[in-house]
Image (cartoon, rainbow, N blue to C red; front, top):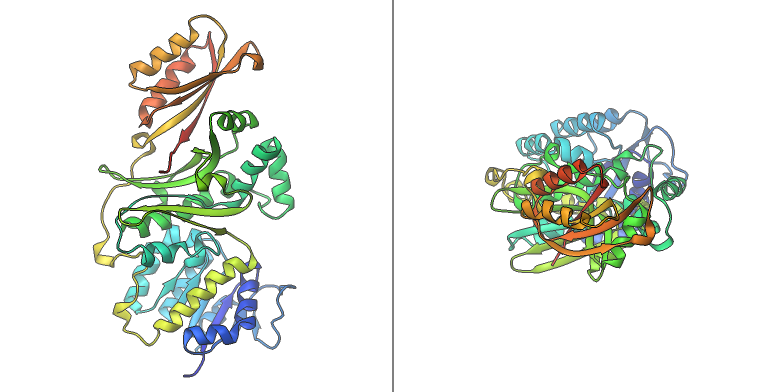
Length: 434
């Protein structure tokens, strides 16, 4: 059979890695795909010094590539929302299959893109959009397809995980580690997407849709960053037997779907609590398989390229099959997606770590306990650090049993109203991940 011709839009880190992997492993890839795969054209504004493109035609106009009649598969690696959306929809209109690593595009515009792809009878593959080289989308969509997924939780942003690891292992302050992450290329000059949980929320939105058979709903994902965490919180968590991770959690409940990204205490003996540095991990709990953990490089030139090329191979394999029998984009048949609501964070349930800066006076603990008890919040453990007095206040560390967040918010408001004895309250959610 004649080779399938692909066009690569974007020759940055992932685009360059994709070209290199396709070129270096051409023979092995052809054996797996059943036919050769050739890069017919590249669209890029500038060359990549880590990528020797040789005689492959290069254009600065991505739409010239999309309109190239020789190209069967368009690989979108330019990133962002608007231009990437226009590019992908144009490719679909032209009857071309699409492979993308763009999590923001899929999370925000995926419903529209998949509907257009079904209309035109083409495929859109996006394994590389979540967790880089970890094939977690295929695992949930295909490997765990016999399961009713109960919940999933993931460390799905390497920058945040690197920062928290350095804070725990070396006692460094957040701002100091962030500067190093930027110098190492782990974080952008504007790190907002990474440290405020937006990047992780894009990925969690995709995973939740595949796990629970619901439409993509990024706008309903709760996000909370790690910028307010201190080394004291990291150390207190350690003393209590926990590690703090910036976790994405999607959970099925009777009321709806929890979809949330925030700092989380995890028991230190859990495998996912020991995922350090820039590595990623996703834990999935199904009713038949139980809990499984997927671990690996969540970003980088060739790990992400590995997922991109795997998607290309899948598309090539499927080119000779009946389009109606392709694996659905979001795992469930399009007319079978459910309307389970996404729960507001106030209705989500968790245990909580509370660091209360309070005066070391008799009766203060009793006041705190009364406020919590009146709201049905039970204390699991308590720790006080009298030697760490600051501005006349000492930290009181509490871990609660599981409770609906609205009750905790009400309790925090009541505690902060005791401004004669309480200075501030820091809250971090706790997940056992059994």
